[in-house]
Length: 157
Image (cartoon, rainbow, N blue to C red; front, side, top):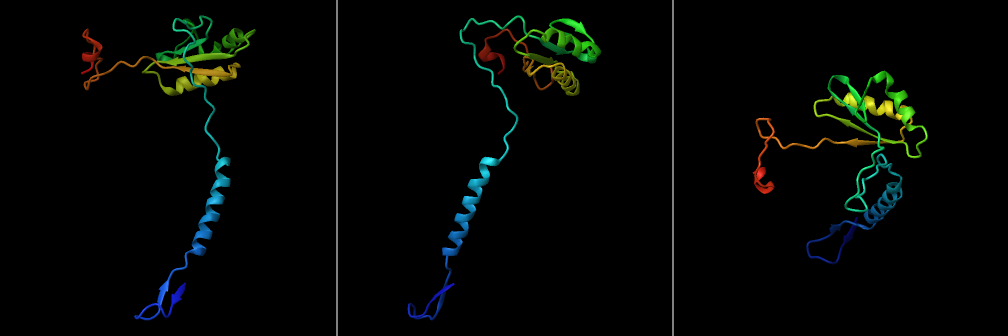
């Protein structure tokens, strides 16, 4: 604390000395600047890129695992059981340079089943697992799908 003796008629007054406070703040700023780059980041993700041409069609040799209700599975529309999933995927991945596959689960399928399918896919040697989301249907407050034949602008009003 600093004080002035001859500056006022009221007597001595106390003034805070802010120089040590600024020193402490500068040290804290330097510490946070050093620590910040070492903060771990999240999981690496691949963002889908738009097709190079407007008429590009998805590859027909893609592997799509669909998890259906009641624990049923399909690989590219061929029915399969949980026990045979890993061996079938391993067979499909042989000779492929890019070991990627997709998984799709319905709205009523528990996420645990989809996660189990992803785990089996990773165990079969799939390096990149893509998620396919089902098209969302707008619903009314009663829970039923709202279907209309009017123009898109008026459809959901």
